[in-house]
Image (cartoon, rainbow, N blue to C red; front, top):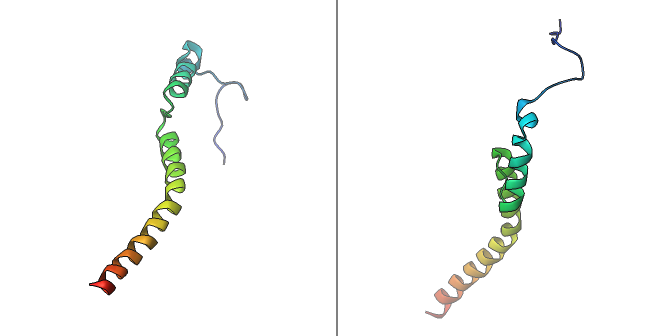
Length: 74
């Protein structure tokens, strides 16, 4: 059987939103450019790593080709 919630359905109260803490955190994170939540920081890092992966792959290919050429000419 499902648990029943107390209170009025569809109506909730957040003391953090009431005193303006949520909006202050949002403004601060927008100003500094870094999300303040753990999941937001992880999402930002995953997006940044996604941009770096093709660059690292290209470096690995040219790096291994360079190593092969130095062995060939030595």
